Image 1 (cartoon, rainbow, N blue to C red):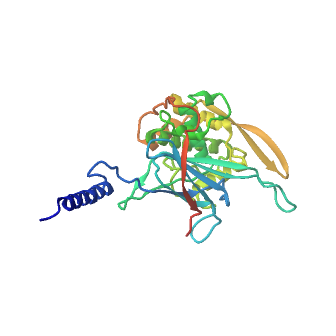
Image 2: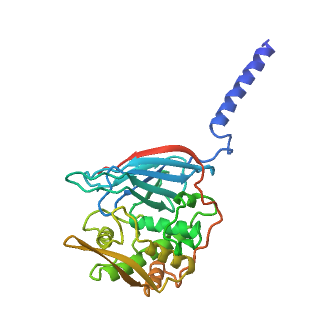
Image 3: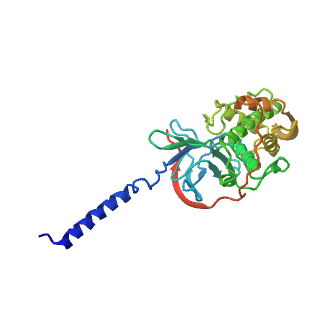
Length: 335
């Protein structure tokens, strides 16, 4: 006759194994699907590619609590990768993500001029998930993408206050707070308005320059910091007239006009843009009057709409959300 105590121990042992199997498998339906790693790549440039800049990607945590970040350093040109290329992988993240590229000031030497500190920003409004479960996005980081982010901050966090003040001190990370998160449609509206407005500035300050197509995707479109790239050519041209500074900042009058357009649906009639020209070592500053009569037509053409839907101010705080972890890292992109 079998010992009943031994029999009971065997039953408990089998039950324990079954429990372990169920726990490992998520208990038959109680677990959640794993969040795929997110890889963001792109190019950081003010015209020339930024080499050795620190790129920080910050996204809301997929758990719904706080944010996660990843960092990389931009590389010099190598193979098929242009100067300023980067690649960052972040775990446990969801869109949108804010990208900040920064490089410190460099003092002048006997043979080289001083280089100012540079901080550029960009945004990833949505992700693309592949068949194998990985999520990817492209985020170029330039003065034009910085204008997009600054406009979103002014519209979503500050309301329309940036139409009358030159700059905002609110962190772009405030866009990640619940209540401030811009929709993909709102981001697209700001991108299209930025392109249309810069084309008008270009026409007023450099009449022979070639405008960008109205559908140009400043955030994730094809971009290389070379003279053959249309976006880079526009940035170089605007830099030559001082509309974009050597630090990558854009004339605040332009940002104010874009903000007014996306928050009211109507651009200001004109924009007074300071223009700097240097001839034979002599620098002259004048003011160019930019008309905006074609901005709405260009924006609605790019968006396939009949009007610009105004962006209303968000309800979230104007501070950065709490960071929960640094979960990613990367390097400059390689060719």
